Amino acid sequence: MACCTLEGTDRMFSRQARRYARKFRRKGLDNSQRLIFNGLKETGIIGKSVLEIGCGVGGLHLTLLKEGAASALGVEVSSGMLAQARTLAQGMGLADRVDYQQGDFITVSGKVPTADIVVMDKVLCCYADPGLLIAQSAAKVITTFAVSYPRKSVLSKLVFKPMEKVGSLMRWSFHPFYHEPDNLDEMIRQHGFRETYSGVTPIWQVRVYVRLGGGDY
Image 1 (tube, one colour):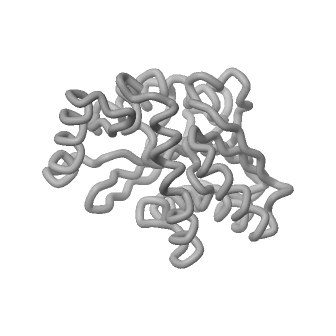
Image 2 (image 1 turned 120 degrees about the horizontal axis):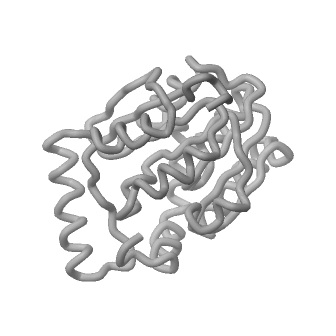
């Protein structure tokens, strides 16, 4: 994560965890998550296993479970986010179908099993080197890979590039990164995927991919 630290990332997101959980209880999925959900429904979620990397409070994978996915594993750096995810899972009657693991996925990926569906919502922009995260997460995908990241637009660049520059100069314990969307798309395709769904919000690009040749790649 470059100058970002695990402790700083944990601290920042844990402070926001209760707010994210309250928002999910009131409004459900946010805009980018709704697009991911729609794209995954088109490829099929019934009976599938889900791995969500950077799962936050769990709204997306819990919704997938509610809509027919068989099981889910959430990997998350923030202890506060995981605490809220467990509470939400219990409240939704889904605790017996979901498990959680704390840590940076790049560090713990060797202990993480493969899944039919792998999801990374707003995670690639947390890493200075997205290629390593894409490589390790793509290796866990059996059929379907869903991602979101800052889209190619003036607004996204105005939001993310100043934070990246100032954060690097000031050595913040966490700051986001802007990566060229075309480069991210090409990296994912190089791991044996083709796009099946695309959508955008004012800030975020959402893409859903399926593995070429099913699980034989």
